Length: 190
Image 1 (cartoon, rainbow, N blue to C red):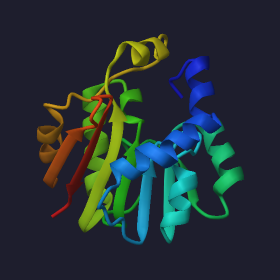
Image 2 (cartoon, rainbow, N blue to C red; image 1 turned 30 degrees about the vertical axis):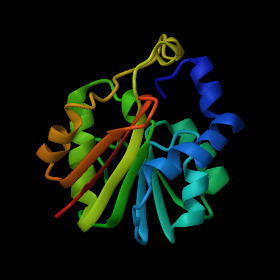
Image 3 (cartoon, helix red, strand yellow; image 1 turned 90 degrees about the vertical axis):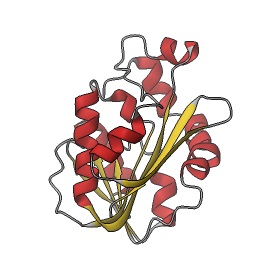
Image 4 (cartoon, rainbow, N blue to C red; image 1 turned 45 degrees about the vertical axis):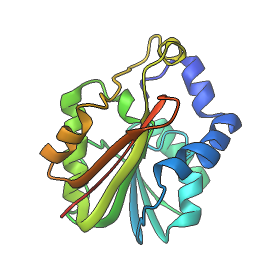
């Protein structure tokens, strides 16, 4: 994972798991029907995964870091399919999922071009009518400090709708939380 020690410590903490469960996921997934087959991209240490396995009948998670995959398999492998892979080059079938989600991971993708490949892959593996949804952090001084020595490529809120549309999505909606610290997005595969 492209994260420094302090960042890894935060993302694997109970505090982060609570923030995810109580704030990030309820806001990011408000009024979204995920359906029955959900794919999470970049689950990291599993803060989102532990909530999602309770909400959806079938969950697959794709994580790029092999050591983290092993932790996720140990903790969630009985209730979710954990796949070691790259979200920009998914080795998953076309149209297999009712929803694709990702939370607080896209800023770890080093370039916009790679993020765009992730959007295209999310589109490809979604069923017609499926939803791509998630959220990510926006730049601030504390966020920048946490990312010293990390990959940090935040989403431009003004450009994201056009980028998702270019991947083929329709019904694209993006907005910032009231504090401007997070962006959420949702889009559909027609």
